[in-house]
Length: 276
Image (cartoon, rainbow, N blue to C red; front, side, top):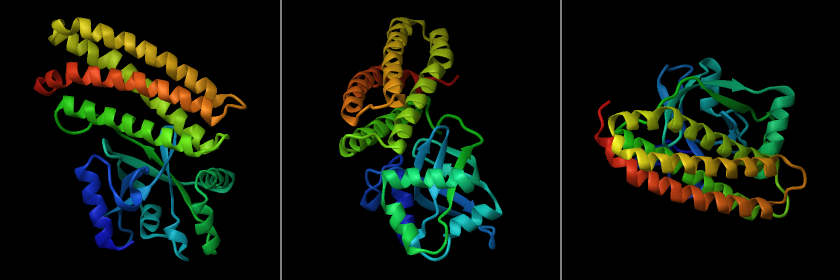
């Protein structure tokens, strides 16, 4: 991929909180910054990724080229990398997967997108699979209310992607799609735990007039939690078809969208004005 095209994608990604057009439109994209193995210079590359619980997977396909991509050589020399996902920028440790784990996860990727198999067929090298393990984190930069909305938008975008994947998957439920759904459920659960245990008590302390709104939001967290539990049970069960799961995702989306909209209406202006 030409450097000027890469730079265009990078700028669009950063300007639009991770949303881009062109060949990456509607896909999962991150920006990976590595340290040049020979030059020591920082180099950023847009890459597609696969959710995998608390980590992300990237595949060094280089479009089936005979040589590994430059970013892969860089992380072999220095596995400490920077990841941008549209809302967060964080440090991660890159781990090249080997043996059975690499083969299993590459097969899972192929099941979700046969294009990976096409790339493997074009080259004599074994295409590497790399796990990105976050080693730090925190809220997005900027005012707290804007940061909250940015996090919410990540969930909105992921729900849209999962719904499309379910609609296009046919009657079966592939392994990667199951992981995508479970990763979303896990992320929402942790986000709501953080709000209940941290942000809401802080807001109550400084803005007691928010008590009714926060009480409603806590009840909504419980309702969304029940939907997440139901969704996780379906994903983990045998014989679940994509149509059944799609109906549950639609229920979750409707309830979650209403919850996020109300939370932003109530809290974003106050959070943006707070300096605690």
